[in-house]
Structures are given as structure tokens and as C-alpha cells.
Image (cartoon, rainbow, N blue to C red; front, side):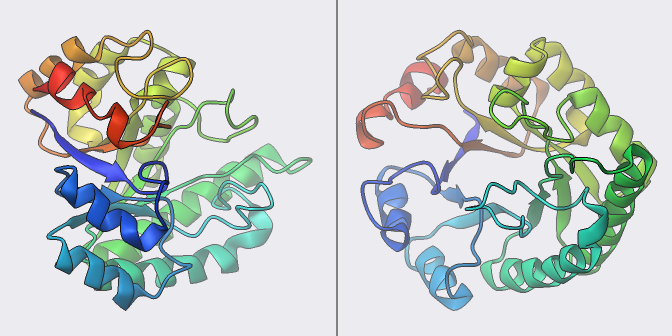
Length: 259
């Protein structure tokens, strides 16, 4: 069975954030991830992880004004200093939390910006972050995201992300493959995962349409989980879905599809 991590941004919203660690552990999860830790004291987060025997699998770099609609700033030519400061802050949190990988959200392509400059900025920022995180023993990931949910998101396909990783040229930059996002953008999930498995450091799941639990939509997760196991994937799979009718009520998919 794959190793599933509870995404505490999406799951267990029935309780306050700091109580979701206990809820995840009680539901059988051994790992957790979430979008951002920065609104909380890092020591308080570390205490929850230790208390409930959980591994911090992943969090993102700071991504600008999330509440204001920003979805990352790595491709923004006028935000390089802010991006670099965010890398330092992320390393501080990840070090305290024992988190060995951090995801970079490229962001929405800035309106009116020169396309060449946008690309150069993203490459340079990823090169900077990969180097700094590597010095701290932390892997950097980059994630393609579908443009139906986030119109204008700059990195939105597997081939684009792989080409970007190759251009950055760091041995500390990997692909985060979100099955939901890539089903929406390109399909061909099994062959894509198999082709790029050595570059994939983390996966995430949700079904389509609706971004709800596996088993609620068109993706044949029972088959896909067996396929991923057969490939020998050893990383975590983050459960980044919206529970259709309560987190605990929807967790039957784990045994039904992956047991």
C-alpha cells in the first residue's frame, strides 16, 4: 500500500488546525502535509508532530498574498528579494519540523510582463532555492497546476516542469506530481508517472471532477495505486482533496482502493 499523508489544509477541517494533527493520527495517518506553516509558531507545530508520532512530509515556500489571490511569486520578476527571503524562512520552519522537502509554487504569470524575463526569473529563483535548500539537506520540488482551477498558473504540465528542471540543472530539484491536476491538464497518468518516476519526489491525489475523495470520480485509483506500487515508488502520497461529506466519513476509500 502507498504511504498516505493527510493534507491538513484540506482534511479534518471539522476541528481547528492544531487539533488536526491528533485527528490525522487517530485516523491512521503517519505523515502530514499542508500548504503553509508560517501562521503558526514552528515550535508549536513541532510539538504536535512529536506528540502524535507524525512525520512532516511537505509544505510550500511562502507564496505571496494567498488570501489576496496570489498563488506563488517564483515567476514574478519584481519579487525576487521577497522570494529569496521566503526561502530562508522556509528552511527555518522545515529544519524545526524535520521536513525534508519543500514545494515551490511558480505562481500566476504576471499580466503584461515580458515572457522571457518571467522565464528567466523562475529559472534563477529555482536555482537559488535548490542550492540553499540543498545546503540544509532539504529537497526542492516544483509542481504543475491545472489552469481550470488557477487560470494563468505558469507551470501547468509535466513536460513543461521537466524541461524547467533540466534547465535549472540542479540535482536538488524534483517534480511534485499531483494526479488530480495532471488528470485535468493532460491525462495519460500511468505512462507519465512511469516515464518520470526517477524525477518524482512526491505525489498528491484527489478525484475528478470535484476534487473529492478517490473513488468519487473518473480516475481508476484502485488500478493506479497497484500500478504505482508495482513501479516501486517509495515516496509519500499526499491526500489533498476536499472531503465530500466529512473527513472521517470519507476515509473508507483507503481500504477499498489501496488496501
